[in-house]
Image 1 (spheres, rainbow, N blue to C red):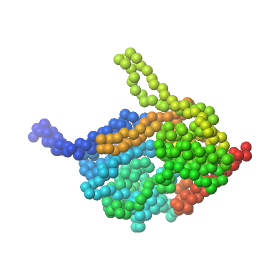
Image 2 (image 1 turned 135 degrees about the vertical axis):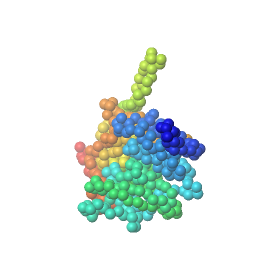
Image 3 (image 1 turned 90 degrees about the horizontal axis):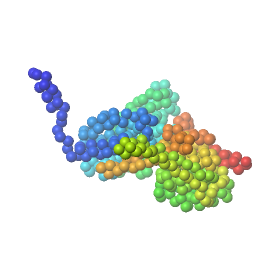
Image 4 (image 1 turned 90 degrees about the vertical axis):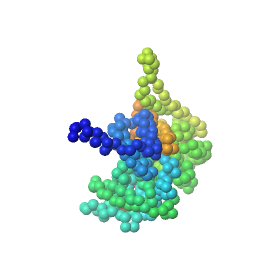
Length: 430
């Protein structure tokens, strides 16, 4: 047989049937989200992510993702390769429906529990009979492994919930990383029906934000205000009134530990009440050829000036942070630390500096990611570095192993409160 004939037969065997409408729609959605990141994500060079190679690998599997969860696991798996908690995705609930079945989640399995410890998710609770066997040689207390991969995809706090969601009673493959660095595999099953769902479950564990956007702790020695997000719903006027009232207590604790960020303008409207002088933040513009017929070239420079705003808070200030404090909450902590004399107490923050943009795909999904870097006038930003606390008070894996998850969190809360009150009292004595 001639070589040309063999080649034709080989090609005929490799080329499948024409794509169905559903397959084409999935590819269109995939291409939209990939291109949105290719066009606007500013950190590829910083993170050394081979985005074009990832497109080839994940896109090749899209036509074979026949069930909704298979497609969304592919999509979220690709996003997870960025390793960026600033990237978040939400598909419409109806898109997850598989015939008459709604998905369930491993987070709904009684006994299964995740907990962020030092910025990484750990499994601190297992369903009856579902706990893995730790590697030989580890002490008995080393029973809280890091959740390393789900269904083969890297674990990112902002994306992992979608990987844990799928058809009722379906298996979920987990890869676990133990204290000694070894990896093991464990398979659990999602709940059989939605009737077993535990409302309010979250991979954020003790750092999950309450439904209320903010709250006070009136029984504290000093003023104490928790802000759980800088969204449009945040009642700035009420918070400013509470901040002003804290003047009479001689100091304020501003708790941003459960704050994942939010709107630029909302954050500015609060932070300006603490600033003694104007400060300027600089937007890093994407590299775009702005020439006209090769004759005129111009560059665009943009900044935002934050100005002192009455009523001014001029008493000692402590800002509490955690390993999940992110985005605009980090900018708030950094500005208050550098320009308002705040003492930052807690853990180093995420390091997610860029301003958020949202893209709505053809399937109705919403992809959010940091699309514009923000630095100060020295060119220094927060990406990957985060805000370093003045007084480190951490919740460590050793704490959780020694005390258990709930007792370790209570102990952390007490240590934070003691450190915050000691810092404020020391400032008052000056």
